[in-house]
Image 1 (cartoon, rainbow, N blue to C red):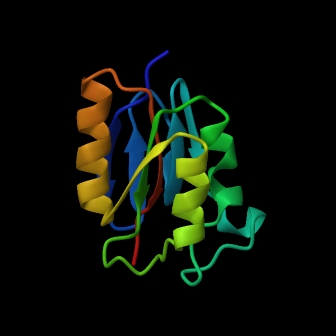
Image 2 (spheres, rainbow, N blue to C red):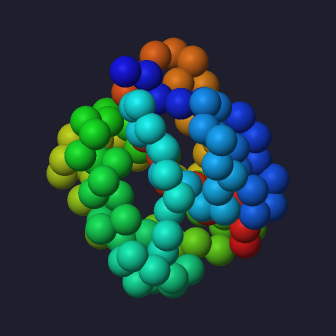
Amino acid sequence: MSSPEIASLSWGHMKVKGCSATYKDCKVWPGGSRTWDWRETGTNHSPGVQPADLEEVVSKGVKTLVIGRGMSEALQVPASTVDYLKKNGIDVLVLQTEKAVKEYNALVAQGAKVGGVFHSTC
């Protein structure tokens, strides 16, 4: 099963190829996607992305996980979150969201087992 391409990105809006929904923030993995609702884990810009935000994507067997920190990189990614991924044998890329989407889509095009979590505003 391949990871879905991010079809479009603009402030506050993301479209995933093959999905009719529009997301503000989203999670993607081989074979699927869904909205990333920060309220589920109590996530805020600071301290930022928590392992709990990533567990669902990690459970899909990804080898690389791309984190989009937002258009202005306001979303933090603590070292403990990066360590969690590395301890699970997952390569991690933490980038500004537009760059993150480009990198994610490049990995999809290469057939990589890649997942991502993307914040599409600040």
